[in-house]
Length: 199
Image (cartoon, rainbow, N blue to C red; front, side, top):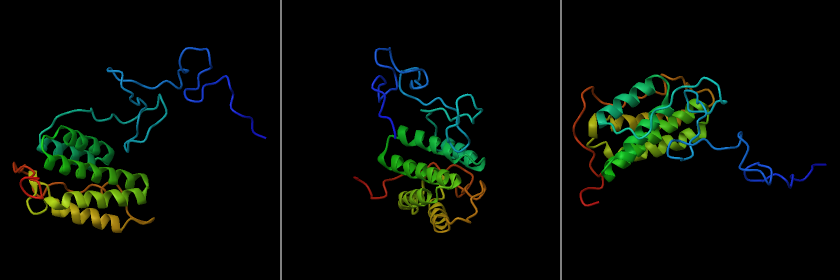
C-alpha cells in the first residue's frame, strides 16, 4: 500500500510548508541576470553529469561570429566528436542573424548538429527525424550555396546517414563529422532567400 503525498511538503518545490523557499537541492541554478540556467557539468555530448563531476566546458552563449568563424568553429567541434557544442555555435549564428535567409540556413545547420548529437547518444529515431529536417532546410541553398557551405553534399550526406541508422550502424565520432565546406576559402556570398526576392 502506497502512502499519499505528505501534506506538509509543497508538491511544486519540495519545501516544507511554513519554511522559506525550496531546499538547496531543489533551487534552480541562475545566471548573473537571474535567468534559470542549469549549471550542472555536461559530457561531450551535452548530457548532464552529477554536480561536482568533471565535465566538458560548454560553448559560451551569445557570441557573434562571422559566417566563416561559425563554420570553422563548428567544423572543429564536429571533428572533436562534440556535435552538441557545434549546435550551440550554429544556434548563436541563427539567433544573431539579421536576414530571414541566414536564420533559416543556420537553423538547419543547428538541426544537423542536433541530429548528430542524437545519433551519437544512440537515439536513432530522433536522429533520423532531425537529419531529414536539416537536409530539407539546407537543400534550398544547394543551387547557390552561401559562405562556401557544401549544401548539396551535406544534404546527400545527411540523407544517406539517416537511411543507414540501424542498431549496427557505425556511429563513431569520425563517421558523424561531415565536411561543412566545399572548399577551404570562405565564400563571401551571403545567403539568399531560396524562394526568391521579396519573400
